[in-house]
Amino acid sequence: MDLVVGVPRHPAPGETLIGSDYVTHPGGKGANQAVAAARLGAEVRFVGRVGSDAFGAELKESLEADAVDVTHLGVSKGSSGVAFIQVDERGQNSIVVSPGANFAVTTADLADEAFDGSAALVLQLEVPLEVVLAAARKARLLGMAVILNLAPAERLTKVQLQDVTHLLVNEYEAGLLLGTPSFTVTADAEAAAKRLLELAPHVVITLGERGAAWAC
Image (cartoon, rainbow, N blue to C red; front, side, top):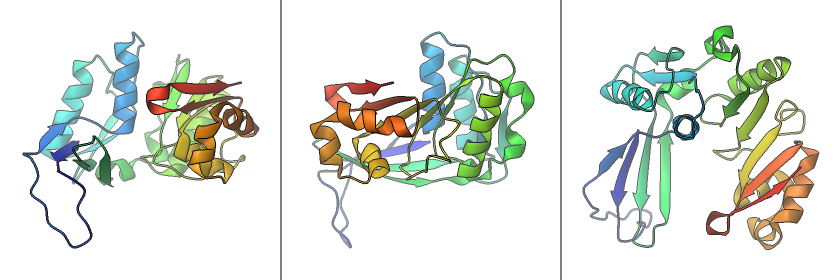
């Protein structure tokens, strides 16, 4: 669940600012991916966990409202994942994520039925890495496309990415993988995308208002 507050600017260390009233929005990278795919007409199953709190029930309902299959959405005792988001007057944000039930997801949650008949698996890194890699391996053995949004950013190796068919990164994440500053990616995103083909057969670098660069 995203808890969002507007601020005139981001506070300095030790500083207290008065912000706007906060608002809540269902979120989480995995849920956002699932809802986006469903709204584009895909038949979507969601694998993950929410907490036993009120946010958990609301998050489940929000997925169901967009026709996402939540048969494989588990419930863990305790809190759901929460993102605390500050947005300044220029639209720049800063985010702190409390993982909650997201970090309770294990390989035991990767039920065979969740993968049966599927064409693609879409992943991100807001659940434990070992679960992400296990899901990718399982999907590839079934002949599925495996799409990984490398966020929150983590520098993964070629071995760790061996089952990823489509790697989706922003400029910062691309720079992290390439060992270069993000501004060099921005300067020539097409070249950066081609370099990343060493890690995955299809690469997309998102560029904000400039669109995206794709290499394959």
